[in-house]
View 1 (cartoon, rainbow, N blue to C red):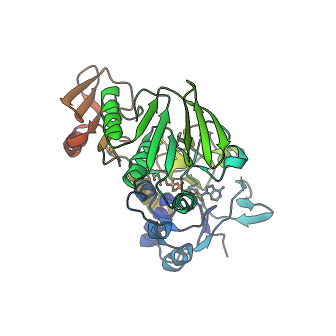
View 2 (cartoon, rainbow, N blue to C red):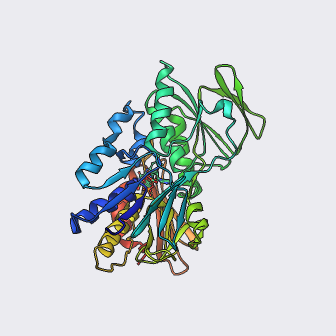
View 3 (cartoon, helix red, strand yellow):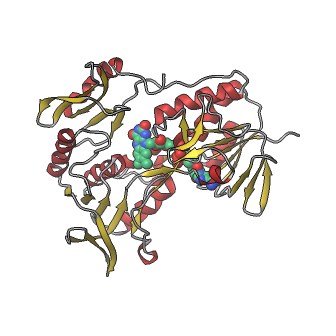
Length: 386
Ligand code: FAD
């Protein structure tokens, strides 16, 4: 019997691909390998669960066992692939060697903490990047039996969403970041400031313009000192300082990678024969968007390719929707620096248009009531990958 199609990762990329593939080929032998519990869940919901007081079991749509049953696949959970040998087409899972026919690497991106978390604080300092992380954070948060003081380090998309969500759940949130406004990678400063004001009005303490200097044990609390000497204490710390594609496994296998991810062409093919990459780990023709719509388009194209019809992926002008109900945000960041930003509106309701030298729209950002313009502006903006 020939070796199965093997997919590393059961996130939205890995499972999305299997669902698409089953529409083409209900019989093909498929093995899925994942380092986590393998539960089927929607990662974007992780940063909306605390306001609704959703226990982890409400976020898991299906267990790994149900996934295996419904999709007719083998799922190996809590199993970490430690090496890929592209010559012998074999995976290493510690001491075990497992042959693959075709291989799809969909192992996502991992948190990038600004400093090593001291071991004795590991039970109170968290990152949340999968359902297992949510389980651990949720259990510690609820074990307090009262609203928690949570210090969030980082003011990007993940930090802002968790800040808004935890505040919505009645917790006391402080957000620490070196920038002068939240969401600098998505928003020009006036819009970031509008979001920051709405967050402060919603009870979130913003400690901007400074970095985390030290973390220490302060009895039942965690003590944080910031670069300007400011000190605070928290029950829990949530580190949300960005994600980087997990490139090490592919790099060690001699596959082309960069900090942006595993390089693929428009057919999701890596530099190694019969090895594909998908989702947050993949840099497709120079673009690693790291959000859901591009990975769904990629999964659809790759499923068709694996079923025998070589299919090129393209991405539309798909904006990112930031889940901060205190001040909704939609952004399609320009892929190159704009000649200027044209900013209109007042208070929290702002529109920012990124224009090139000829006045053409190359991106946009919207806050507050202006998010309703997203469809109209996306129609006029350039695609991410034509
Ligand atoms: P992951 O979901 O990270 O899956 C990676 C898989 O690989 C896991 O199963 C893991 O166990 C496995 N793995 C890793 N290493 C190994 C190994 N060595 N061996 C075996 N298995 C391994 N995007 C949006 O479009 N809209 C949103 O609103 C949105 N909200 C978000 C909110 C949060 C809090 C976060 C963190 C992200 C959000 N995103 C959002 C981004 C989106 O969720 C991701 O782009 C997407 O989920 C990535 O899916 P993935 O399958 O590529 O990676």
